[in-house]
Amino acid sequence: MSSKTIDIVKNKILEPDFEPTMKTLTRILKTITDNGPEAKTSLSLDTNLNYARLAKHIVWLEKKGIVESTVDKSKISVGLTEKGRVFASMLSND
Image 1 (cartoon, one colour):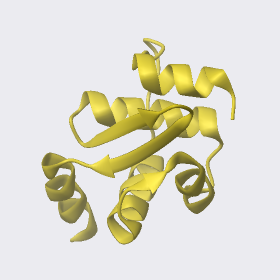
Image 2 (cartoon, helix red, strand yellow; image 1 turned 30 degrees about the vertical axis):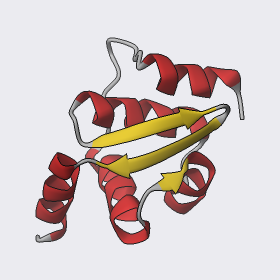
Image 3 (cartoon, rainbow, N blue to C red; image 1 turned 90 degrees about the horizontal axis):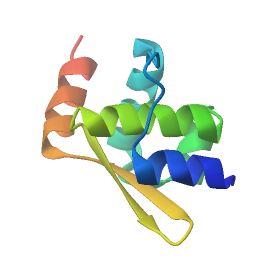
């Protein structure tokens, strides 16, 4: 895993022009909803996203209060917040 990916998640900094796609956000939220909090590697594999793209979406979701990540050394875990659980359940009830 690159240190750039860890930096993105640790520092919560996105390019000003970053625009997440709804399809990608939905895939991330569904995966976390189905599997519970996941390490970044598992989440990357389960959502079929590379680390850098995943990290940017995670930071965007964190800024909205939907997920929270914890960084322990070089391990990043991502889980839904209470707001995120409500949001994810609204997305899945279509």
